[in-house]
Image 1 (cartoon, helix red, strand yellow):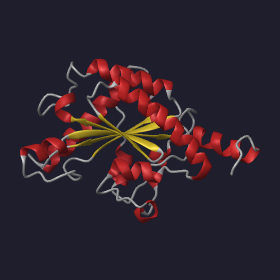
Image 2: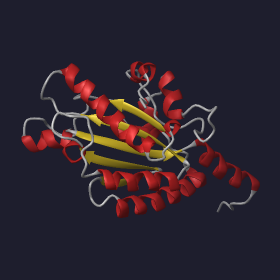
Image 3: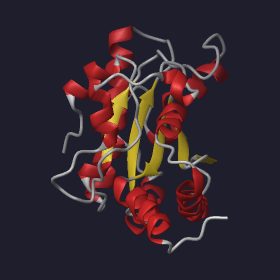
Image 4: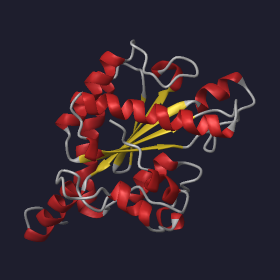
Length: 232
């Protein structure tokens, strides 16, 4: 199943937010990760640059903040603990504000130059899918990145296909397609310099961003409004 949306990709080149507006648990709703790619959102508003760090930008743009944000942070912290336990060290798992960022080095997931998932990480990726099923009130951005070796066109295509391959695997193991947005950034968003072999290895990566969906956000907002949660 191909999760790539060409209209999303073209609009992402404009200043784009990856946060959530409408929950994906309802099949008739549209993800904020999709909808905010259809309009311009100021990066300055969120204190992050999409062009330099799309993963952190996605999390920053999704922030609710305040007491509802605290509830979301607790939800993400519980999920982070599970992810670190189940992924067996094949990914770096970071808690960032009201979101989670997982970084997989491409050499762990794919053979060199390929977008076909290797066999070795698949048992851990199945466990990842199970955690995502348990924490269903989230949406995911899967972002592929490459180093600068090769042509811009080839790197862009490889980054897109790698993101899609991981998304397809998660979907095949029970994570609904509506929860996932994929994007390839090619060589445009390096973490470090590509001048060294180690630097190029770091830049060849897939980042998975997890943020709260609208249902979770509305749940905590309503709890505050109804007095179920007492504000200090």
